[in-house]
Structure formats: C-alpha cells, structure tokens
Image (cartoon, rainbow, N blue to C red; front, side, top):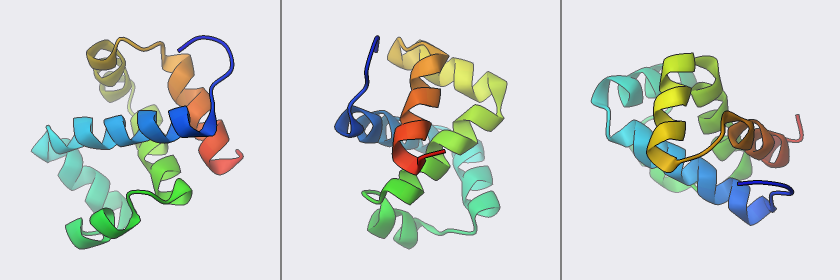
Length: 90
C-alpha cells in the first residue's frame, strides 16, 4: 500500500493481521495472553478500531512476526505503521 491509506484500508490490514495470527496458534495464544482477551471477545470486538490497533501493535512489537506478515501479504512494514496511526491516532 503506497501513499495515503484510508481508514477502511487500515481496518482491512489489521483484520488480515488477525487472520495471520489465527494461522499460528502460538502467536494467537500469546496475543490473547498479552491482551487479556479470549476468543469470544475477539469475535465481538474484531470490528472495533481500538482492538484492531492492538493487533497492529502486536505485529509491530515482534520483528519476525511483522516481517512474516508483511511477506505473506506483500506489504511494506510502513503500511502496518500507517494503519496503526489511523486506527488509534497514535
């Protein structure tokens, strides 16, 4: 994703990040443990910007995970940073 990212594109990127995490049980378990959230809450909050920002935070906090996600989605890591900014205003 080059240039200006829309809020909707940021949401989509974060949702893809969540799907990526779900494909790795260890990473998903660590995400749930660190965020204090269970599967039911994930389902309920998956569309919430704050939750999606937490997904991007988790990806950004682990370089190997970030690189793997970006390679899988053919993204530049800057896109994840941009999505984080749009989702959380940080």
